[in-house]
Length: 98
Image (cartoon, rainbow, N blue to C red):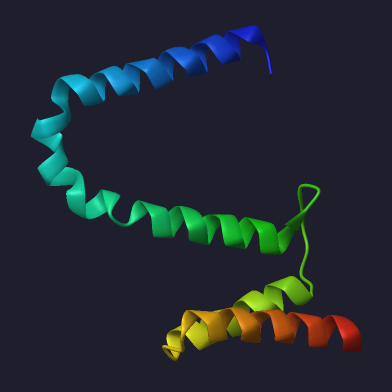
């Protein structure tokens, strides 16, 4: 990363913080419904990136199948602890078999 990029990103970050201070209350009520969904969307994106990529390339292996089975468990409205255990167990079994 070049110094120009670092400076540009720093300036952009400062500008967004300044915009939030200046116009925070006017936009907060309109954007509240969308900002409530951001943590879930970011967490989902992180899980997908971690489960289908390795060294910058697309990989389909036991991790992706485990995430899919965990997704099915979420869809069936199972408790979160059980969802994690099912996803881990299914990934481990697939790695053991293959």
